Amino acid sequence: VQSLNVLALLAFASFACFAVPRKERERWLWSGALWAVNPLAIIFERKIWPPSVLPLATVAMIACWWYRKHFAASVLCGLIGALMAQVHLGIIFVTAALFAWTWLYDQASFRWGAWVLGATLGSLPALPWLLEVVHRSEEAAWRWRFPIPHFFTRWVSQPFGFGAEYIL
Image (cartoon, rainbow, N blue to C red; front, side):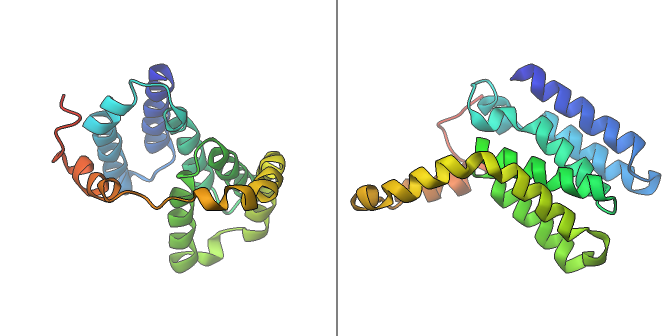
């Protein structure tokens, strides 16, 4: 996991140096530096769990999004996003934010049909899981639980370092 994260940081820095125009490059490099020293990332990435394997794929998705005017890049962007969502559903929020921004501010630059094609192809491996969920949804409906309030307090406190659970 640590090697994947180091590779992701190097890929992100390389992408910023070679793909991003010089006048925008400083912001990208600062974001990579902040990512590298993020205390929560350091704490959580010591463990092997699904989100820990996604940084390199996230950099690949951002690179494909950057070249979204090209058919192949748009297909790959949708494919990578759909495959990553099968590893951890939280990636749906990242892809939704990325594509909502694109829809609102730069709609003409994106090949939406190609993205849908890639997302559809990437979703195919999830079909057996989806069919199983639909099949068992009536059995498990009585077990639905709402998130405990502590979940919401951690959601706000941990990213800002207010929690004592994860001290460095």
